Amino acid sequence: MEAVLVVVSLLAVCWMIQPLFGVRRSWAPRETATIERQLLDERAQLLRAMKDLEQEQEAGSISADEFEELRADYMADAAAVYRRLDELGIDIEGSDNEGSDR
Image (cartoon, rainbow, N blue to C red; front, side, top):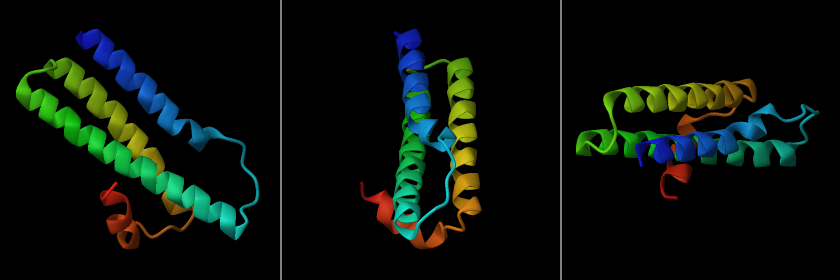
């Protein structure tokens, strides 16, 4: 069961970060807004996933090794999202409330 959880989690992370590795092109304002929304949504998903992971570890649902591996993956993905937001000059502080109630 734990192996299934790890595989499903890794597949979900890969699916979520795949837009970050798309073809670069010049950004029109509307496209930037769409990218911003996607990145902020992905950020919110990663934050929720890390919170869920901590709860699973506290409940004893996953081993310490699995927790550390998944946490490292989530942290790397979150860092990539934050870098991309920074590259686009998107203010994360002003967007915190928008993504948190989803």
